Length: 165
Image 1 (spheres, rainbow, N blue to C red):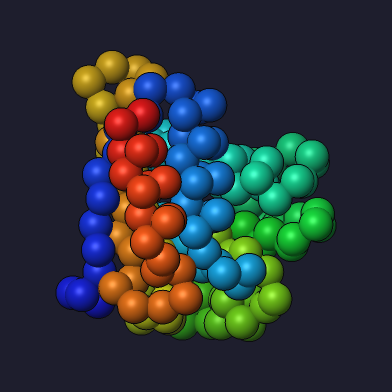
Image 2: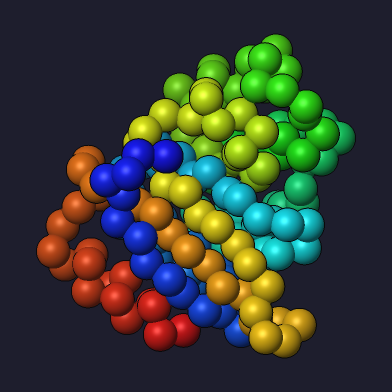
């Protein structure tokens, strides 16, 4: 991750709030958005992907592709959901076609992105999930690339509003 990223901290207290955050972030990004998700098991990564799918108009159930590693969902915009939990090294990510997925004309979301950190391009939005003070609370740190097509003044206000979820 580049040191020139802009970071924002969010707190969500329900899956619905996590989905709303996912939609808000997606609305700020180009059609080929790339999300790199980081966090412990159960910290909210898949819930976030469900929010992305919902925002994309995908009605199919979204689950983590832990064993298949890659799921593709069709909607008005395509979603590619990658789960690298079972990988031990970045070269294994290359073997399953991660680099090709990243270049697809789709929104790409990679869970356990740290397992292939060297393959994640600088344009990725890195999202870090942590457990909050109770079972439903999540602390979510979003690191947006400092430059790129996602930057507009109007969108900054939307993100700041969501920071208070």
